[in-house]
Image 1 (cartoon, rainbow, N blue to C red):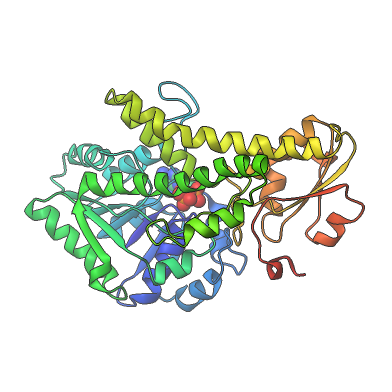
Image 2 (cartoon, protein in one colour):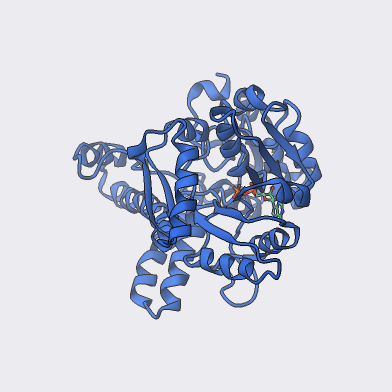
Length: 408
Ligand code: ADP
């Protein structure tokens, strides 16, 4: 098995497969040498609880990391693709559709280096119908090779990725419903069946699988925007949004998860996937539906903005030179990931007002420094929250850390 892309998705997924399936040789390749080098050490390029222990059980035995993409492709029978597919920042669909340049490059790498038939497993989140496009690119080969593309979207949540991989609610495997498509589907089902009960392995056609991933993330984000929208109203009428969430969450039709009011959702998936869904709807002329889903992102922006305004208002409408400590910078607890974190937006706003911002986070300081490098030494970083809080005029709680994670 080969995995292209050694990031938040590829690394943990392949470590779990290697751990659970000693009969497979698993190789993870990436174009970034520094990242591959870090995977060989105890200082992994990403933080995820339990990941290092998991990697240690199989690294060098049946789990390997390499920068030699072509060799990996040549030697593999099944290729998982987990390269990044960020939102496009330029041209047609900018700000909404997925940027497929890394993904297409990967398709072309596979085409160039392959010497035998392969199953390609899409694990990155991609717009619907990408698998078909991938198959079109791959079938353009003059070597007579056959590629069967399967969609296997990841549903793991950062911070609990290892638990999610070990005991997933479900694993979704979509394929074409042709003979060869169904055979490829079975191969992938058989890998996961090494540790996951069969009734949790859901199979479907390709497009259902691709769309389900966007839909799942959009529904999750919708819950956060729904409760956040009520938080503003609660503050006006002296209701407590936590009490409202508890009351409605007890209804089993609603459920209690993802109902915590906050400064807004972040992360590399929610916004991106909703925007992908929106763009898809617009492409098909479904403008009302696009507007409906897009409003979830708008509500999120509103909430983050409101958070900063609340800080400012509470401090007599001026925060210039005031020391404001941010507790948490990662987009959620137990991860080093800061992609699309609300903290970034909050920090920028506070810096515009010339506040003295101090950032504290147990795992994400390195990424925070990188995200905010334009401010240089104007921002203070303190891993120790006590030092961050010392003499602060305000503490803004951004990430929902348990007390213990902050070494209290
Ligand atoms: P995700 O959260 O989706 O896993 P990451 O950015 O953490 O996203 O990981 C994606 C990885 O894919 C990055 O490490 C990037 O260097 C790698 N990558 C992108 N394009 C290619 C490529 N053509 N070949 C190999 N690796 C690639």
